[in-house]
Image 1 (cartoon, one colour):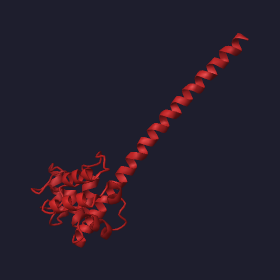
Image 2 (image 1 turned 45 degrees about the horizontal axis):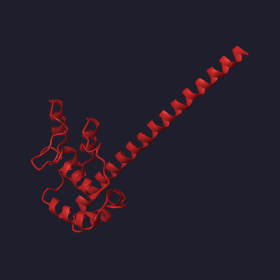
Image 3 (image 1 turned 60 degrees about the vertical axis):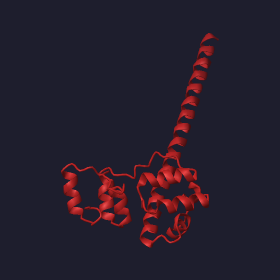
Image 4 (image 1 turned 135 degrees about the horizontal axis):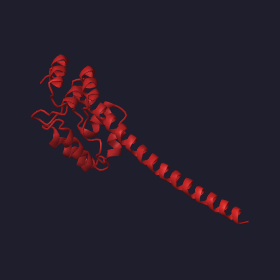
Length: 171
């Protein structure tokens, strides 16, 4: 409730007393999601600085079903979930479309055209966050592949140098 009512002092005190920053309410929403939805940047920043995340960082998101699993995991608007499910499946929305939305209104069109402005903005920020995580994850994978290729090339070059040195020593 402290997040819902924007009480940063209470949140700090609860955290100091050992409260879990990933705690969810009875609707399944985390404190971080509530802070984003309430547009309370101070609470959002405090929660993130103390380890809060959306909890969906490792999800592979491509299909409509992936999006629905993601929304379910976030615990967003459980009362609206049947409408989102219908709209996303009917319109065959993909993750590329969802994460490619350029503004909150475009995002609302994909989810539910009558979504109120505060939820449009909240969803947009959450989508941007998840999109950045997905891009970061993809870049990390590319870096791992590049590092492995560089290590293999270095090992091959070293082996060639050793063979050349051995051949020179024999000559």
